[in-house]
Image (tube, rainbow, N blue to C red):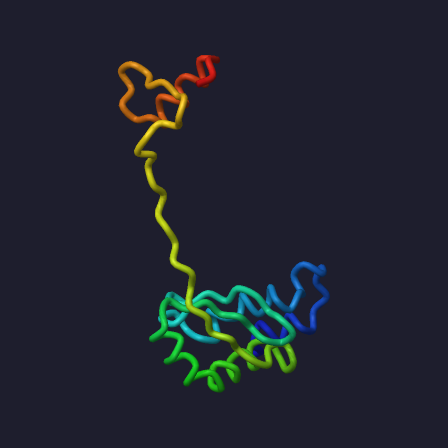
Length: 130
């Protein structure tokens, strides 16, 4: 049975599907397995180097030690010359959405609505700017 990556290389697809970056990002979870894929995300392919965001510095250090093994798996999935190196980078911290604690200067609170943002939305829906 032939691997999907090899079959795709032989087939004629539209340009969007055969882009090396798209194929490399799609092959990453297959090449590394479920556990590693949960803690990483392949983001971009720059001149043969796949940039992979990792959960933290510990994951970065551990995966750097497995780099050659992971490169072999990617080569087996994608074929030679697509990914030549892997660059592991810590993921940027994501901030959760935050509620507004105060009303914008000049905005008057709406009677009966405690949340300042909801009050502003209510006023705008009624046609009065505030």
